[in-house]
Amino acid sequence: MTIYRRTLLRGVAGGSLGMLAGPHLAQAAAAAARPAEPARDIGYRAWSGRAGFAAGTSAGTAWRGQTLTVHTPIGRTTYSDPFTGVSRDYEYATWTSPWVRPGFAASQAVASWNADTPSGTWLQTELRGITATGATTKWYVMGRWAADDAAFSRTSVPGQGDANGTVDIDTFEAADGAGLVRWQLRGTLYRLAGTTRTPALRSIGAMASLLPEPADYPTSTARFARGTVLPVPRYSQDVHVDQYPQWDNGGEAWCSPTSTSMVVAYWGKGPRPADYGWVDPSYADPWVDYAARNTYDNNYSGCGNWPFNTAYAARFGLAACVTRLRSFQEVERFIAEGVPVIVSAAFAKGQVPGADYSTNGHLMVIAGFTEHGDPVMNDPAAPDDAAVRKVFGRPEFETAWRNSSGGTAYLIHPPDKRLPAPPAQANW
Image (cartoon, rainbow, N blue to C red; front, side, top):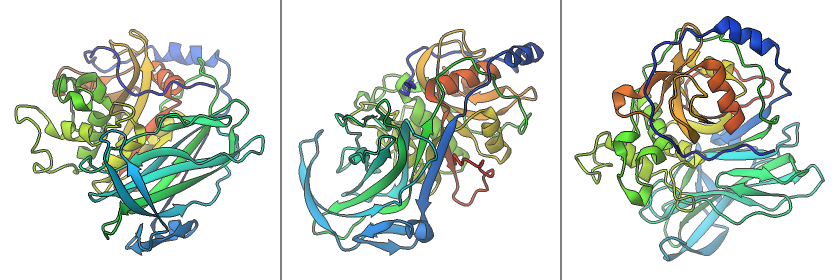
């Protein structure tokens, strides 16, 4: 199965619409005539803190509060940065998760991590699995990450494909018939050789899924958050057109860091003026430029790497992960608890009421729902910040979201924030 998953907007910014009443009775009748949807198998598992990390295997790490750090390195390596040509010697330590049985043969998996990486340190996350045929895969690199680009070029890793699967930027994709019936993560913490400055791993996890083929299945009815709209700040990606070509030139390419910036700011967090002092003072919302630079994936040549965005949000003391949600009812449950949700979707022009543009992959924030249950969006595809707030048609947008990205979402919140209770097949 193929789920289209790229996250850069390839369309034009659209205007906003007012609250949509919509022909809901007609939509409900049409939905009733559609075939029932097969199961959407999605599982998320993560480890954090001393209690969580104790379930795995550490080699060379030590505790610093509730984080894992390098203590007695188990090895040393020379890493040549493919983007700068600079080679440096690093010492490293590892943490390996226990095996996870998702209960299905996962066709895709996306890892997430929350960590602090002082200058000169970085983190590599890897995934391996046991396939439905009984084969044990190699370790696939899911990301090489550092919080800033001063000494290390943040990057995904191309060219990893083999008989069991491949990695498309940030997503492991199993080969046909080789879905993962078990999976395991490994985090490797690197520090410059001969130094004591170390990364600090706060959490690591992964979402694995097996989804039905995209189709016109029935959509959900509003239940949990009618009339609830959260005060998420509004930032436009389009006010950044042609800014900083070295980080993909702003505008439509910055939908992901712009959306991430909105939710980080909603929680009262974000970079300080001294952090983005390098941004041209004539530019609006300079924290978005800062986020774009610090989510940029040098291999992808873009800012749309999903876990790089959640790892960026976690720099500000937030908990953040990439997962998939099954329907807007699950999104509603987060809104009801005061948690906005960033979603990834693709759609054609005219497909989604309220979105007068086309995109083959776009990130935006669901800030709430109208009394009728339509999603209230903070859509960065807008000419200015004031025009970011829009309302989309619920059934059309829910279908586009689930069919294009499989229901991909960023969940970003304070670590102590109460979240809705997860379902039996937990996907958060």
